[in-house]
Amino acid sequence: MFSKIILAMALLVQTFAVMAQDREWRFRVYLDDKEIGYHDFMLEEVGNQHSLKSEASFEYRLMFMKLYGYEHENTETWSGDCLTGIESRTDANGKPYRVSGSIEGDRFVLNGASGQIELPSCNMSFAYWNPAFLQQERLINTQNGEVLDIEVSEPEWVELEVRGVLQPARRYQLAAGELKIELWYSENHEWLALETEARGGRRLRYQLL
Image 1: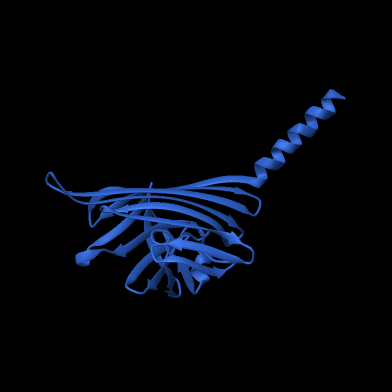
Image 2: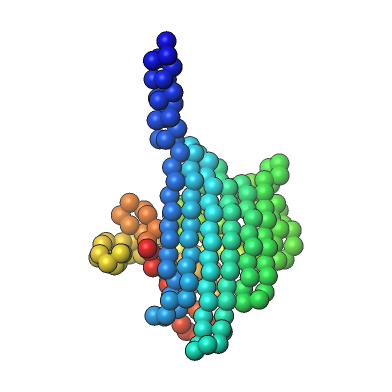
């Protein structure tokens, strides 16, 4: 009897291990060729439910003078490809932002820098870790709560160096107003890198650790 109970428990643990998956993306962040910080993403998946936590910290100094600082923490919950909840806090060089959102009835209620708005029940943020976001027409900016119309190019096959090794990658170009982002994904649709234009024509880029 006890052996059957132990076997059943082992099978249950194995089943849960298959259903529950944890993934992470840890990036070193550069402004041009100068390292300025990090941005980490931790994803927990159980079946169709996902929980994402991200944390970023940038600091740019010239000699001993701090010219720019950025701190960002974000927690999101998902059901499939639909965002069900968000809580974020940001300090963008001394300017604070806070964003929250959740499903209420058949709407997604979002509170951001411009106040409260109601959206359809299924939305996506700039969820770089999930390539499905590239199929959207608009996305939620988790820093300030803006909803931005986007355009995404067709993918271009290129070679990208990841952890010191060249590999084939799909490169996408995403435009959202003045925001221009380049994204790279592996043959298996894993997020590999990000690059965008910063003020003064400089380049902000994410290098996967």
